[in-house]
Length: 189
Image (tube, rainbow, N blue to C red):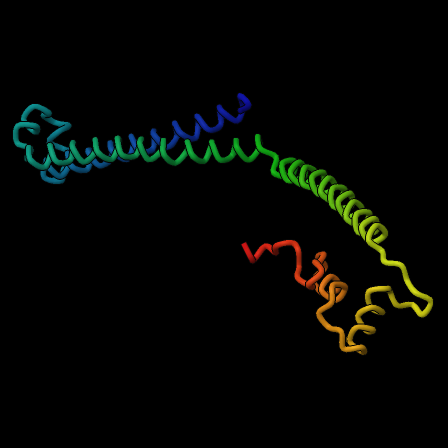
């Protein structure tokens, strides 16, 4: 906090505490006058005799009330000025625009990294898909059908269902001579 700003807050605090002191003094003075019967003349002419004739209960009550006004006013001044000064200093010390731009910059950088990672992953998946398709590509016949489709049609037409080639074509697993699959599937065991 700058010295001038600190001085301004200190003066504001001291002004409020001085106001509380003045208020407490006024309350006490009013109570003292009330204890004397509402007139200040006896106090000015003979102070000793006026104090003996004063209502001590009213004088003590006025003194306690004046003291309470002074002390509570001072506490109020502290709890009023301290948070306001802290809030004002925080507003000037913390630049929300700079914080916002730093956060956005970090998020943009991370988003760029993620987009790059997604592109690399997409490229890797596409290259795996194309290499898998080329590795397992079945030879095509002259009419555009593959060899397994032709064998399946031949077996259905001739009525020879359940042959070794038919099982292999439908399940994708090799079959023995009886047409049974030779490998276990995951759901069998």
